[in-house]
Length: 147
Image: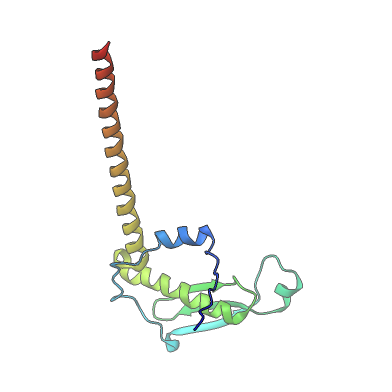
């Protein structure tokens, strides 16, 4: 039986670098809120910004209000109302998580993770610089001893 080799191009470098920094290991999703449709007031309105007649005549901007907390989100990132609805719900969930959980929210956990990584990276760089400095001092002493 013959097998056919399929060539698949590698993804662009920008996707690889974005994936490298977005690690979701050890994140606590136990307190992440859920949205109930009865708690949401959803209205559609006309958007603003560039786009001319397409923006001025269509009501594809989504305005969500979370009734228990009175948090509001206005989303007009896409031309389609269906995409804006999905995007607005994601944004509302993130804002609700930040409001309810504060330091334990997913965004705060990711920020703390990135800070720990940058501190560790900085510590390693300082350690390497110290090692290089000591090596250069030893080398310069060896050269002086030879002369």
